[in-house]
Image (cartoon, rainbow, N blue to C red; front, side, top):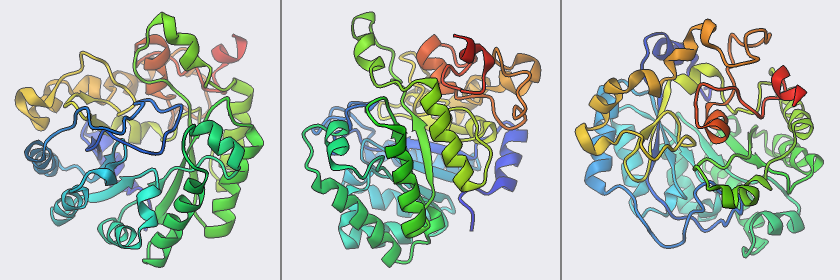
Length: 347
C-alpha cells in the first residue's frame, strides 16, 4: 500500500478536482513548538462545531475527495476526533492523521488510530533527538516528550501500523544544525523503517513589520536547506524538489478548511479574506473559487513563477505556494526557499 494513490491523484489533477481535504478540527496543542505557525493555544479560542464538521465530511464524499488530512493544533485533543475519523472511514474516505505524536503514547489511542487509518497515514512530529535542541525548539516543555513521542510511534507499530504508512513530519528552522535534523531522519528510517518529510520553516499568517524580525529568526539559509533536502531525497531514492513537501499534483489537488471556516488552497496559506464555508458550504464554495484553490493558473507552463521555466523538474514541481504567500502575499510568485531557483541563488 502506498501513501498516495497516484492514479486517483492524477485524475483529480487533470480534472481540476480534489484528491485531499486538509481539515483542521482543533485549535489547541501542548507540544509547544516555538516556531508554530498557529502559535496554538492550550485553551480553545475557536474551532468548527460538530454539525459543521459532519457536513464538511459528507460534502467531501459528494465531491469525490479521496483522503482527509486531519489537522490541528493537535487533532487528537479534540474529544470526539476519532468519531469523525470513523464516519469518514465509513463513507469510504481515506484517513490521514497529522498528530504531534504525544497522544499516541496511550496504547488504546494508538490502537484506534492504527485501525481508523488502515489504508492511510499516521504522521508524527519529531525534528530532533537531542534533548538540548528539543528544549530550544519547545520551550517550557519537558524533554520527556521525546520519549513519549517515540513510545507513541512504537505503540502504532505494535498495533499493526505498517512503518511505510507512517511519516515523521519534521520542520527545519535556523535553531537546528543540519546534521541534527538529518540524524533524526536517519534514525527513524534505520530503527523503524519510517520515512520523513521536511517542512522548511514558514511563518504562514501575515505579520506586521514590527514583529517580522521575530518570526524571520527561524528561517534557515538556502545553503542549509539544500543540504537537508538533498540528504532526505538521497536516502529516500527520490528527486529533491525545492523546499516543499509535496509535488505540484498533490499541491493542486488539495484544499483546506481552517478552524474558523476559511477555505484555502492549503492549511499553510491563510489569507484573512479567504472564502468561508459558512456562506454556502464546502462544495459550492469550492466550485465558486476553484481556480484559485487549485492554483490553476500555474497548470499552464507559460505562467510558471520566475526562475521555474528552465528547471529540470518543473514537470512535477512548481515550488511551495505557501512560501510564495508568506513572502509575497501572492500564491503565484516564486518559492523564495527553493535552492534550485536561480533567482534565489543570486540574491
